[in-house]
Length: 202
Image 1: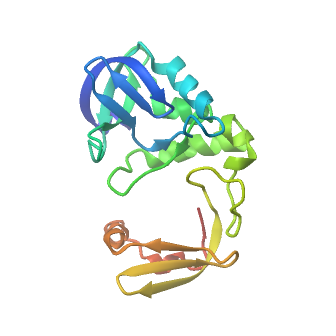
Image 2 (image 1 turned 90 degrees about the horizontal axis):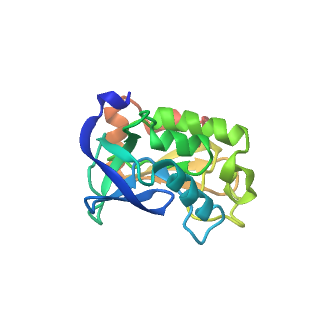
Image 3 (image 1 turned 135 degrees about the vertical axis):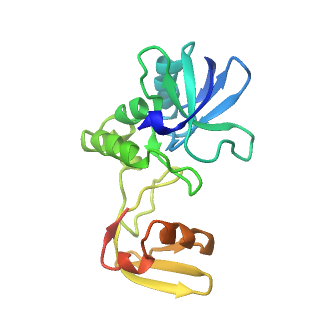
């Protein structure tokens, strides 16, 4: 599936700043698309950086694009593949439990494959999934959480309100908001938020 993506720059990784940010020999900063690592001050943050360092530092890599190519800081948003051996960096980090999947509306390429790799690591309690602070939560659980969290619950109601749509969960008083700008994404996919009523979502 990576071969269907747009080929981008190639070069050598000369610095690893976090579990999802590297610097190329050209000076280009690359934010790994589709994944999120804990910050260095959070649990497992240094381990995430170490995992990416071991995998990519001083390695020749190719950048592959499947959505927005730059973020607001002008960093490349790309999937990385090692030139030697062709290992997909995001997948390797997910299998090791070093990072979690986090996609955005303008950059969702490879999401099913990444979610599958994450699920396997989570089932095995690998890496950060061995820590309670990163476990999948149910609505109403908030304590001890770091950064963005994965919450799983059953949708009790789907409520349009002006330009937004709200998903109200059956427990814990949690609501998720779908912004008007994202409703088109549902439409493009041939899906309706209304179809989520009664469904278990993550």
